[in-house]
Every structure is written in C-alpha cells, then in structure tokens.
Image (cartoon, rainbow, N blue to C red; front, side, top):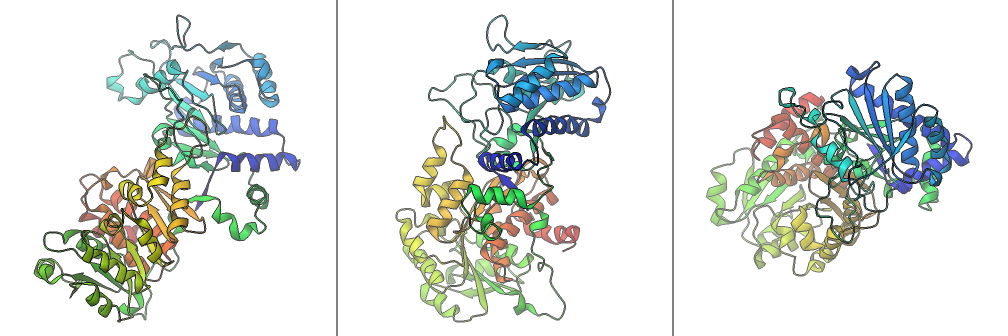
Length: 556
C-alpha cells in the first residue's frame, strides 16, 4: 500500500532532508518544477516540441516558486509563456524569490486581477488546445479559503479541451489545466474546499485535468471533493526516497514515536491496492471446506430476506467454506426458494442463535442487512456479540442502537467490524459526524480519516466508513483509504444492495481467517474491482458473480 501523507507529514520529510544537508530547498523546488514539466509531456506527448503556450499563475508561497520553475523550463523548450503573480514579489519566501528572479531573465510577470476591466481572461481564439494553464497558486500548506480567483477558476471549468472535438466552437478557451501539488483551495489533509465565514454567492472552483504531487499522494487527493477537482493525480519523485529510512525517521519525530518501525502505521494512512491483498487469499490443495470457515448471515422476516441472501452469496463467492442463512420460521420458505449451496437454519430468537453458536465451527457472523430494528432483533445482535465470534454489523444492526450507541459500544470486541454509510455513521457517532459537516474556514480541516479513526477508537473495533472514499480504521489508529476514483471510479456501486454484498464478502474473509482490518481492506478493494469488472448496468446481484473473473484476472 502507498502512503497518504498530511501536509505536516510532507513538510517534516522535506525539512529533515534539508536539515541533513542531503538537499537544499532550492534544489527541491527545481526538482518539483522539473517533475511537473515531465508529467505534462508524459500525459500529453502531443505537446512535445516548440510553439505551444503556457499560462502560469503563481501564488505568494513556495507553490508559486514551483510555478516560476515550470515557466522557465517550458520557456527553455521554446514555449510562449505568460506568468501571473498573486501577491507581492518582495514578500515571496527566499527560494521562491530566487526563482522569481530567474524567470525575470526570460520574461515578465503580470499581476493577477480577478475583477474589472483588467481581470484575468484568455482569448478563445488564441488559447486553444496547445495551451497549458498551470495552477501554482496555493499548495498543500493552504490554511485559508481561496475565494478571489473566480476569473481563473472559471477558465479551468469551461475549457473546451474537456469537450469532444466536434463540440469545440471557440466560444471558450481550450487550455489543459495542471495543478501543482493539489488544486488551489482544496485542503490537502481532507479534500475539503476551505470556505470563509460568509459564503461566496458565485464561487468558481479551480478544476484540474492533471495534478502533479511530490514524493507521495496526500489525503486530499483521495478524500472528499479532492478527486473531482484533481482530474488525474501523478506523483513526481523529487529525490526524497533515496534513503528510505530518513522519511520514516522524520515522521517518527513529528509524531513523537520512540519506535517508528512498529508504530508509523498508526499515524500514516495508506491507500489500498492490489499489493495489499493477503498472500493466503488463494485456496490450497489438501484442504477441506471447514478449513475455510463457516459464515452465518442472519436474515430478516418475510419480505425482508433479499439483503441477507446478497450478503450470504458474497460470503460464499469470496471463498468461505460454508455459509448458512439463519432465518425466522416465517421466512424459511421464502429463503429456501432462492438458496441452493447456501444452507438454512431456523432462528426465531436470541435463544436459538445462542444454541446454534455452540457449534464452534461457525466462526464469522453477519447481522444487519434486512434484519429489522425491533427489540427482538436487538436481542439477536446482543447474543451474537456475546458469542465473541468475528462479527460484521451493518445496516439495521447499527441503526437500531441510534438512540443509545453506548449500549452497542459496551458489547463490541476486537473481532468486530462496523460498516456504516454516512447516515448510519451519523446515527452512531453524531458528534464526530457534526465535526465533518462543519464549514471550515481555516485548515487543516477535520477529515474522514480523522473521523473514522476517532470512531474506531470509541467503538473499540474496526470501522469501515463507506463511500467512494471508503476509510477503514482500527482502534490503534491504523488506517487505509479505498479510493474508487480516477481509473478505479465505480459509480455503478451506488445501487441498492451493494453494501449488503460488501458486508457478506468481508464476513466470508473473516471466516477464512483474515483479521477484521485485513478483511475490511481486502473486501472493500475487491468490491470495487467487481464493479469495474461488470461496468454500467450493475445491480447488487451481479457483484458476487464477478468474483471468479476478478480472481482469475488477478491470478488469485
């Protein structure tokens, strides 16, 4: 898994490298600018050569310094380059001021104006597809709202380059937009767009086609509004990885960790990837079904059974050796009409569930999908938790405790996993959810990673906070983000029942012996892969049936 850094963590790594004498700030700035230029040509090879245009908007900090480097390097490639500066050149940081002076040897610097006759604008007949518009205004260190750049933001949004060629009529300019580090205005720690106390009625956000980050992605690239505004994210190497120990030492010092090797995972989030899949996911020869666990999914009553069957199918397809649906007698025939490989047991209350769980081979439970919220259903959840098995609680099993979440928290143990969506999360953790919803005028903003970590610590178990930016955390602070953005964008997962399948997949992985954190990370990643495998038109029933094809493609 790749690291997802906060702005403070990135600063600590850079500062440690500078203080060690390994590199100077000026050298890092040069490498950053070079990384942006290389990323432009890697993304758009048709721009190689001379005769193209660049318009670079530089800000008052080191992100602006990166912009001056980009401008100079493109000018040296015989591009026509225009540079705009927001702020006073005399107040630029030292390294940015050096690169400002270097640029002046090649061209002029215009002051950025947002309103009036002199406001920033690009002539649609001149600034066409061979133009790159560079946002080097504010980078990861942003702590205040960006609200005075509507003219620039408007151009980034209406660029005709985003349209099919036959729809380009030169009514609007057509530049390709590149943001340095992160689109200006987005909090690098949260993906939240910082906003002032007084809302701006017509705010034009800066929207990039390509975002070039340095050393590592930041949380804001995969959380909140970040992905929608970044376009595509590439990471440029600026030479901070030559000594792999140094960045880890810097992070340990930042977080006051005495033993960085064992504890960095508690403070640095990671992005889930194929490389994070457990090595023992494939099944082995000379094993039998009980070696892969027995999952039990508890069903709701008549006309409420479909969700549990979706979960059970997910558990079976992911490789649980056996799967049973526990159903009220009143829904036994309804479930039996739809199930073949999945077994059925009648469970009419907590007593029957407790008796069934005397069979220690049943090692993973799933409760919530379609369960119902009555007091007898709550008794089922209590009985399941008292059995101390690996347990996934989803949907109704979470909502039923909304009036007094502490009752649930007192029952949870370290083998449990909660998988709420936004509404269920707010029901269980109203104060944490309120912090996420608060308008943020000063960064860094409280993030979904912060919220999930806090929720996991309070609950005492793994929490999987669902969404396109699914965040998974355990009580120790270990955290990963399963990002369904960019090439992994899977909007078809926004369909009834997809979360029920995810709960079942995770339950099946628990039955197979994965820890709750491993099961959540693996299940969430494979869930997206299944959606991508099927594509448009996906419904929840399709998801489990994609698992064999996904496994074959991944050679699992």
